[in-house]
Each structure stands twice: as structure tokens, then as C-alpha cells.
Length: 520
View 1: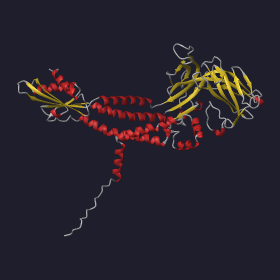
View 2: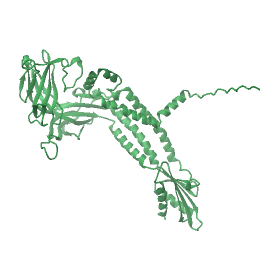
View 3: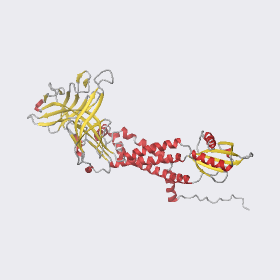
View 4: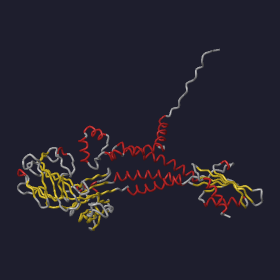
């Protein structure tokens, strides 16, 4: 007889194989835990979009940020932090969340369908073991009492089924699971609406001085951000002219508001639809204009000094209203005048427009937002206006390849202060600059979002589904009737069971018995 240790046979480990791994991956992706993680990841991934300048919104600011931070800028640009919503990694999170939600919804839909079609389970033999239970004796035969209980339960919106002659099984609260399902389907709708709006929508911004018009064409907008599937040559041909911009400011130091605060903004416009007749429309801050191809919002306003630059022979090199960007509540505004046609070197002017100007120890600033004493304070430069061909803001002057014009003593920088109608002769025979007057401008933003209705309806449905899933209780009530020892009496036992913690189940059982008394 051998005394050695018996050799155990090797255990054969099961192998998942390709199909098994695919099934495991699908179950992990479609779990609720994964969907919540992806939703959180999507929110975290959107943070860079509001932290760093986005190239699709302000390419000049993005280029300047990268130039100011060359090391970090190149790394972040390679990672797509300046085009977050068009980056592959953000699209991957978005699509995975979409697939995960669909994978969550489909099986839950099938489960809810079977639950609503299936009969409530049989009543337990011992109802007194349920969380909520009450027994009583009532007048009437068992059959009569059971029918009265059936009506009472249906009156309380229960679905009632009888498995035998002495019991009733009732169930309600399917709206809870339906609300949960609607919430998840609505989230898919929100994703579809947002994606639809991103792919087929576009947005544009334009500054329009009084008396001028803007056409719905690509070249007319100051900024234009189309979706990937937008054909920029197929925009609806409408025009919008700014006839007048009415602005009212608070002129009293006491009373209804702060001194200088805006009271009202209203742009009177002439809108000409494609193939239609011109019609006058008002655009307000909270009253946009619907064009049929988009919505026009009044987002900003300011002043556009009318500036004329001439050369030494008096030839006009530049003459147009030049928008200046407001910097404070009193409309101290900054801007730039760029004259690429000047010679022998290009000219540029940068400075402030002051509606009610004051220059003191604080520097040039405005003390009231209306044009009570308009002044234009500028410094002049010559050189290359657009070094390297980089995009730049219309309100700023890139002086990297420019030198300031000298002042009267030949050392100090030239400073120009003009009031409406005044002209300043530039030194060295470079010509002159004239401040002709002041016009107002309106900043219009045009938005086209074909998915906004889907997004709105889905968001409302998600809210309804969330409320239903939180408020509605899933409850089951079981009833058993038996003849009492006294003739003409019936013993009624009612038990209640809730799917989750439900402190009101006892009151529900009592309410069923009260409803039974009311059916006599």
C-alpha cells in the first residue's frame, strides 16, 4: 500500500472566449453604476470648456493665451482643451454615455412591460407576518365582502386580481418604475437634442452701428461658429437693419435705482425675410427676434465713434464708425483704429472713448454712460499691424511689431485728445485724424439650434419622471376573507407590503378598511 500523497488532478478553469468577454463588457457598460460614472465624467470633461478660451468662440483670445503660455499652451492644445466639445475624448464620453443609457433602458422597459401584464402574486398564507396588518369583522357574507373590497381597492387605484374565492391580491405604483424609465429615456432625448443642435446648429455674433444693416451671410458676421454638418452657403437670406437704439440711464442719485444704471434697452430694427416685405420689429434684452432660420438676441451695446484718417495729401484712408468695447458701468470704452493703407508704414491708434469724459489722477474715464461730453483719447503707433498674420481682436492693437509715434518734444509718446468735430495733425507729415461724431452700436447674437425643442421636451419629461420616481410608492395589498362564528359576519384580514421602506403602509391598510366601510 502506497504511503505517498495522492496527486490531485488539475482543475480546468473555464474560459470566457470572445463572446463571453463581449457579453461581460456589455453588462459592465450598461450598468447603472457605469452610466452615473460617465455622467460625472462628462460634467468633469466640460470644465476645461469654461476654464480655457475656446477656439470656436474667440480664436484671437485662444491664440493669445497659447502665446502667453507657450509650454502649457502646446500641451493643452494637443489634448484638445481649447476645442473641448469637438475633441475626440469628449465625443467618446458622450457616445459611451449614450450607449450605456440605451443599454439600461431596454431591459428595464422589457421588465416593466412584463410586470404590468402579469397578475399580482398570490396572498401569503400568514398575513399577520407582513409589515402592516389589520383584521376586523364586518357584516355580510364572505363573497359580498370580497366584492366590496375589490371595489374599494380599485377606488384607491389598485390593480386587483383574485387567485381563489377567499383572497384578493392588489398592486399599484407602477408609475414609480415608469417614471424612472421616463427619466432615463429623457436623458437620452437630452443627449440627442444637444447632439442635433451641435451638428446642425450654428451661432454668430455681429456688431451693427445705427443706420447699418447685416445680412445673414458668412462674410458679414464678426464671428461664426457652424456645426460640423452645417452648409454655410445655404443660410436663409434675410437682412436686419438697425434703425435706432434707445437706451435709458438712471440720472437720479436717489429713488428707484443706482445713478447711471441702465433702465431700458430697445433696438428698433427693419427685418426683411427671404422673399418677403420689410417689417419693423423691436429687439429687447429679453425679447429676441425670430427669423425663421434662427433667433436674434440683443446682447450688448455701446458707442462707435466716427473716425476719419487722411494722409498728407488729404486722401481718406479710413472713415467709418468704430465700435469701442465698454469696460465699466459708465461705458469707459476701449478700442483700436487700424489703417493698413497708410504709408510709408501702417498706422494704428489705440485708446479710450469716454461718453462723459474726465481725465484726472485715475487716468481717462467716464463719469456717466450717456454722451454728455464725449471725448476720444488715443495713442498712435506705426509699423506692422498684423504680425505673423495671427488673428486678433478688433478692439485691441497688437504693438509687437509697431513703435509709438513721438510727442512734441520727440521723447514722450504721442497722446491725442479729441472732441466731436476736432482734427489732429499727425507729426512727420503722416496725415491727420478726425473725430467726426458718435453713433451707437448694438451687439446682436444669432443662434440656430434645431435640437432645442427636443432638448426642452426631454428636460421636462426628465423632471416629471424624476418627481414620479421619488413620490410614487410601489405597494401591494393582500386580502383574505373567512366566515365568522356569528352568522352574517365575515372576518377580514388585510396585509400590506411595500417594495421599499414605506412608513405609510400601515395607514394604507387602515384606509382600505375604511373604504370597505364606505362601500356598504
